[in-house]
Image (cartoon, rainbow, N blue to C red):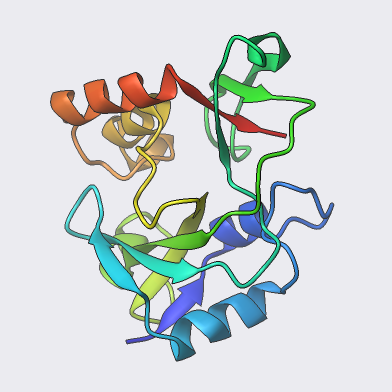
Length: 184
């Protein structure tokens, strides 16, 4: 099984500006090499048959991507309409400013099959393509954000995967994201 970095993930996980929310202390090439050489602690099923998540202990100084919302930090929440790429429609996003989470214990790359990558118009030269990565304290998946679920349901022409919305998964996601936010 071979894992490759997709251009979409490279821009988000290893941006040129060196932002603190990116993967730290290694290059995209070093990251991919490690994923191909090291067996994951476990493999989690993704939200669709073409998706899987590999759980690895964090070997970097990358910090958790999500922070619980409390009465003490709620005033640091910010929001804006943003698109992940030029082709996507902007959606409402929310994040913390002025907080720094702990170093994550786990890195959980999100992988799509080569067949799905081709379906989405981004063929890869490998079996699995990295489309994202979660930085967590527990070796478990963080629920996909509700807006990402909606985008996926819109189809590949709108930057999604074409997977229909699962109402119960969506409600679980809302319950989580009402109490948590990303940081910048």
